Length: 249
Image (cartoon, helix red, strand yellow):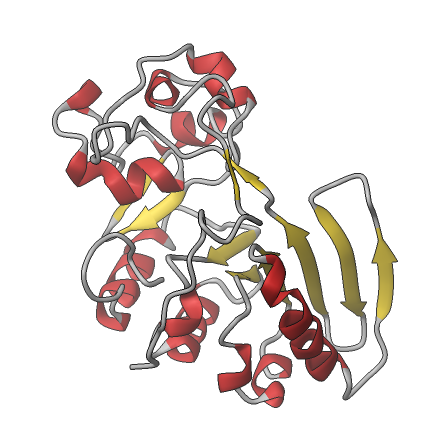
């Protein structure tokens, strides 16, 4: 939603145009808002309203680092029907703050709590009455997409199946400025990858059935990302994820 790494935001005007076109050919079960960081979007709830207009029955999922949750009213989250929030814990020094923010959100009503130490989602909180779910997740180790060894992204030319096997978003197509892409990295970085593979994303008039059938499966475009974890870095190490000051616009 913050349209990283581009300047500005995914505007509500562009979002409405995109969903007006894509809602004619797609009915997704889940629509995810991520970034960048979606909580810095100045019209976040207007974006949610637009999504609900075109896809009234989908689950709306928000993926956030949670650090700006205190800038929103708790009641705002309860106003969204069929809603999930995934809060990603990155910096260890932020964990106490995030725990307190989650407790604040959960205070108005009763929640079912499920703990799991074996997966990156270490706790699930579910409010069945409000149809509202919160996932708490640890992203300790991160494998950057593409090869950034020279400062700008370039394809790794790796084994597509092996790269897909360690992918952090293997089942997550992304809609960006009118087109749908195989995954968030290729959609966000397409303008920086040049003519590699001549990959341009799909429009509503393209072969959507074939695209859907390949969701969750490796394709040639997956060769752009690493097929091993040698480049992984520790998100819990402060020097790897420095704290930046962010203003709400």
